[in-house]
Image (tube, rainbow over all chains, first blue to last red; front, side, top):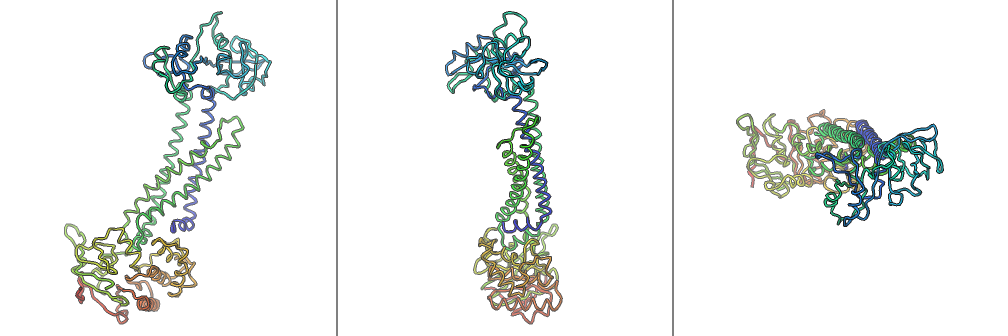
Length: 360
Length: 227
């Protein structure tokens, strides 16, 4: 990179301008990634936090996709799953979004109904009681253990406040499955149903056989996130924006290095005439692009991390961790280098004869 | 023989026909001698240099540089040959804008895979030899035309070439500076035993040459028969 380093120092203005573009795009992608992760956390953390490998949904009719809102599994389903070889546990989970109230304060919450002794329930949960997530307690005016909250038509005692679980952008309230079944049922003998069955299965489990026996459709936890309608739409839109930003950055970098390579074609011709091998020139030019990208992405990532730290403590859903800031930077560098590689390959076509001027 | 062109013919496409740039040209240049190539514009002088520099492959004939026949060489091998054995002094200095005068020379070492930093001393010695010791850290835009041309010459000598190909080095210089550059080329050819081929329009240079050949329509008017 003998010439490349000196070009970087000599054409400071041009490279600073391009570097600034890389910084800004990386900053934007970094912030968008943090926001995407933050929104996803508020959408699915209660589901991803379940100690389970799979979720079994009620088999949707007519080839439809599974959905949390449409799924309703009877008790026979989790009994059937419990008896399947390779399934260590099958626990019902009821999920319902409703209003909760404590005194004058009301808040939209997602009630997760689980069996108190079933392994999915947070510590302290018992029939007639609820465990509030921290956000739910905050939105209900600082509800504390020992207090009461009204969920649907039930008055329930707060057993504890713990965790940050959220579902579909609402804080989670953990309740006994029997209480959960009564929340939305006006009768005195609610049907013994749940929304899904949380399975803890090992590799030997025959999931298809389990589905046939239970009349369900099983999904891994990651696949099951697609059954949350708001998550699919929201996450899809944000990922699309991220994808476009990556594509734009690759195009911008590619365009810059195309112009830059054309501008220095005469220098390339001279170096070739003096004996520079084409791989040497390609390495020099690509190395220059990678240095520019690494510096720009590094600075952009640092700014995104700084801004993310400032806003992650506020109401803005923002996740600041290594994957959200480092992965976009790495993708930026990789795609930018790919764009630059496509541009600098025109070096191979530069004719060293042009360095001699008119040779005919 | 350090540079040998034997029965070299080179044609270029010209519409539906082909234009003959070099027509059965033969030329021998021994080490430590200067050969001038003169002739009108379009007579094939620059084509002769391009072929000798292995930048163009002739249609037929042999080009031997430092005892090595270039015909069977790949592009990479020809690049290596240019790095190690051929120095080119361009008509225009063709210096790289981002490099200082010393770095213009150091890059030649770097192209050959040698650590450029360790060869700064040699670069400074060569700049001193062309009278530019005090301009080592100047970039091209900070040098005069004559100074740039002297850096161009020093660069061509950096890898101690056995063949020096010089393309009208004084065309952009006034008489005084042109004479100084010619003095330098003569001195360096003798001292470093290079086989120097000088393309020139300037008849005043010819008395300093060991031999002069004239090109007309792609033919050498007084070619020496090749071995």
